[in-house]
Amino acid sequence: MSALAVGDVIAQRDVHLTRASLLAYADASGDQNPIHQDDEVAVAVGLPGVIAHGMLTMGLAVQPVVDWVASLRLEQTRPLSERSESKGAPPPESGPRITDYGVRFTRMVVVDADAGADVRIVAKVGALDGAAGTARIDLAVTSGDETVLGKAQVVVSGLDAEAE
Amino acid sequence: MPVNPDLQGRTYPPTVPVRVTAERIAEFAAAVGASDPSARIAPPTFAIVVQQAALDALLEDPTTGFEIRNVVHGEQRFAHTRPIVAGDELTGTMTVTSIRTLGANAMLTAETVIADSAGATVATATSMLLVGGES
Image (cartoon, rainbow over all chains, first blue to last red; front, side, top):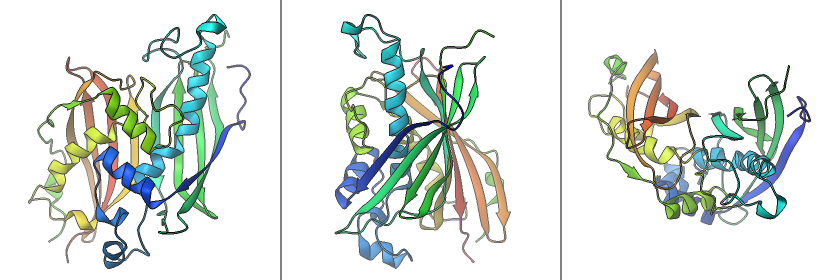
């Protein structure tokens, strides 16, 4: 944990969304609202066109942090030959893990039928609490030049607490 | 009809239990672009599946004074006591914790406590909804 500093970029990712992405999320989540699938319905309720589920944007924005946490969990596994989540990693309720995640939905992501939509995620260390072994990771989530999630913050707990 | 201010403090009955299987986690993980959809631990937003069921009770309640088509998701938060894993059987119990009316419109906050089959809290999912009342 001492290797981390506020402001460090821990992960960055570009995600391309298509109408098929929205369909897959609708099936996985059970949210079959037609504004995420049908342009006619979307336009009828005053939207520019089909938009991504806010919860899909929220769900994919945290994935770079999920990967970062998974790598930290594997680092706690010894020896190297047994580095797999099923073998030596700590149980899910201990070790590095995401304990809190919140966002504000500031802008809709319109997903064009042909061009889709692009979402960029930059995850930075926002705050560190060495004694508690927690880090707050702040996500900047944009599509084009627009911020689509505001105050997107992830709390990672179970980091090696520093001896102070 | 304006948003019913008496909703504040109302708790809805628990949802039917949601069975969390490895397949269900994998499907959700793939849909949110997880690098390893076969991971044992569910994605951080998976609890939405349980919260959605809880929220349906509110959205179908005829006494709320609003309709689902006038609801916009403003904010969402998940606080986890522990991660959700395959094998969990989860129920959600939702309470409307606050309503702030602005004319016919309102900001409604609903908190869903998600518990496992032993009754232990696994996560709390909090939604802020922007609700347009009928004029």
